[in-house]
Length: 292
Ligand code: NAP
Image (spheres, rainbow, N blue to C red):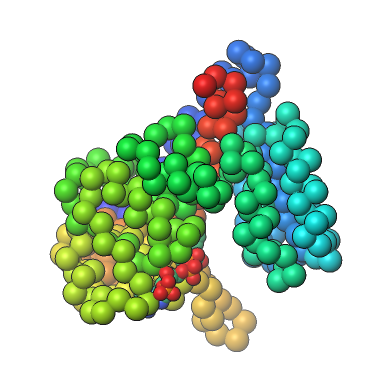
C-alpha cells in the first residue's frame, strides 16, 4: 500500500502557519498582507479558481481586493489597473488569473506586475532569482504549483539529496521551475517533454516522478519504478457519460498506486497546495516589504 499524499491536509498546515504569521505581522506593524485578484471575463474554470483563492486568502487573514473586469477590457486598461495596484500600499501580491482573452498579450501583462508583488512568481526577475539562488530561499517569490509539489515531497521526510528526479513537462509555470527547485534540493534532475525519445525508460529510472503534461491518465505502471514517489500535477476533466464528468490527473492512479511508495491524488493533491503557496507568496512579499 502506498502513502497517499493528502494535499488538503498539508495545505491546511501551511495555512495555519501563515495565519499565525499574519497575526504577528498585524500586532507588530498594524497591517496585514493585501492580495489583488484580477479576472478578465467569465471563463467558468477561472471563476472557480478565483473563488477558491479568495476564500483561502480571507481565511488566513489576507485582505483581498477583487477586480473582476469585463471580457471586452483591452490590454491598456488592464495594464493601467496593474500600475495602480503596483503603486498601492495596501497591495503586496497581484494575481492575474489566466487565461486572458486572446486580444491581450499575457506576457506583457505579467511582466508589468512589479516583481516584488508577483504573487504567482512568473516575472522574469523572480524566475532568474529562483534559478541563481543557491537555496530554495524563504524570501523568494516561487511559482506556486511546483513549490506546492516540493512541499508535498518534504512532507514525506525522505532524503531528496542524490535522488533521480524526472519532471515530465517543461512549461514556464510548472515543469521548468520544478526542475530548478529539485536541482537545489540536490536531486539529479531530468526534464522530459513531447520530443523526448524513449520517455518511458527515463521515467522508469526515477525515484521521484513529477508529471505535468495535461493528458488524462497518460502515465501507467509500466512507466514507474517500484517504490517511486509520484506527484501528479495534471488536472483534466473527462466525461463519464452524457451528463457527468470527473477530474483525473495525468497518472492512471489505480494502476500506478500499488507499485509506488507514495502518490498524490487528483483532486486533493497538488491543487490545494497551489492555492496555499499563493498565500505564502503574498505573505512573503509583505514580510519582505516590512522586515527585510
Ligand atoms: P502545458 O503548458 O500545456 O505544458 C505541458 C507540457 O507537457 C509541455 O512541456 C509538453 O511538451 C509536455 N507534453 C505534452 N505531451 C507530452 C507527451 N506525450 N509526452 C511528454 N511530454 C508531453 O501545461 P502546464 O501548464 O504545465 O500544465 C500541465 C498540467 O498540469 C495540466 O493538466 C494543468 O491543468 C495542470 N496544472 C495543475 C495545477 C494545479 O494547481 N494542480 C497548476 C497548473 C497546471 P512540449 O513542451 O514539448 O510541448
